[in-house]
Image 1 (cartoon, rainbow, N blue to C red):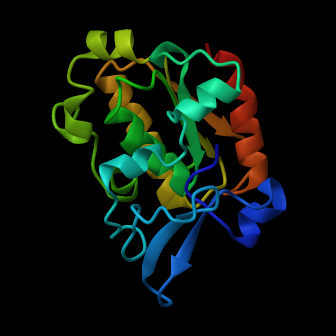
Image 2 (tube, rainbow, N blue to C red):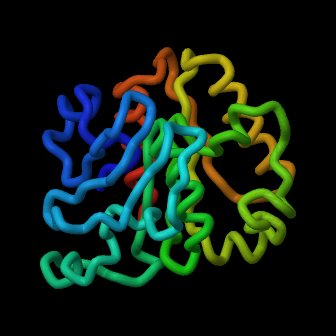
Length: 206
């Protein structure tokens, strides 16, 4: 499953044509999110580019990971203890937003060069009692629900992003939130960083 990218030369070179794409209304506005498997579905809409997106909560599950067809087509374990989500760049930001609002559905979470969103790009520490609706307020309870919270970044990524992720890592440590923080040596905001991220992240699942 790939989120946060849709059709673009950046992703097509790796993933081929994706199931979901945008129908752009103008250079700076986005209308429909189109599903090639269900072209008549027009329920999902985005307005403006990040960080001003208006994202319906159900758009969190745009992957259709929870579609019954997935479990009927593939050999899956469909409970939350066997469900993970990870994303790179903007997809990493979305992954944290989505999964931390749906801990009834996900127990493995990965952010590759993008976790934290405006918390990372801003200049403040995590407030475990209020950020992400307070999911970090009780470390013991969080540890029981989330088997893996994984954050990664390249050592030569843009300084603002790297410093923000390091600050998020330090804030999680201070709040006693169990997590993994990884730095890819000598790589930028690029595929080599995310290949290394995946290599470290994947063996920790399930």
